[in-house]
Image (tube, rainbow, N blue to C red):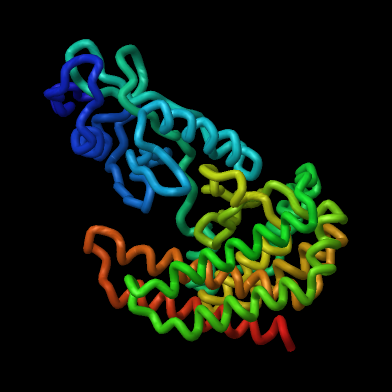
Length: 350
């Protein structure tokens, strides 16, 4: 490592390093024990990811939201450790561990080694971008046999998970609360969306939940509600000879307590949005064959409708960002998801 090019921090020992200095440092090839040819920097809603030739290093943003708090170094360390633990369930050899970002004796940053830990990094093995499911869908290169392998992997994962002790009533109540929370956000005047569609969807979804209560209750009684991945999307699936799934929703266990039919329907919905509905069909059919679990079709459409509304909410939340994102992009994305939600809501009731 070329330490002469490492940013020198103006903070005194015992104080947190300036965030800008951390990002600048980690964006340089000389920051790493084995110097890569280049470093790609990707910013997400809650992290910065630094991609080297063979590894990925994730730095959590010092943010605080209603559903998470990364505002302290200790909170970020604990979250990094939890992220590694949870993601090793479906990507054991991808999540390599947690490494401290330290401030050495000379006041210079270093990845690992002696010194004061001023932040923490999740270290991952970098996956081939061309094998990610979203890339394969866009290039028209998805093979049914690979989706069958993925479905069997997920079926084993859910079968090994202990049933959550949630009661049928509590499970239905949690679904109802999420439906109402989505409506509250999407109908807010802050975002300027037409209230009619979110309100129609919420009424219909809550009505389905009430009129089909036994359907949900039976899923709970069968032990189908488990701790899953929580964010099963094409960009988190890598179709290697042994498929891996990364980036689970690690910061809130409540959001990971779910019916596998819900999670798989979510992945199928996102494949549909990428104009590959057949991939979702292959997934659900292969899962049923591998697991013996055949969720009713109406239930799958209900879950897809709810997930689409959730994605609409997450899209419109981008309008609260610092203005770098084009307004029309996120409004259009939210409306697209609401249209998908309406389609699956209609199918759930047909």
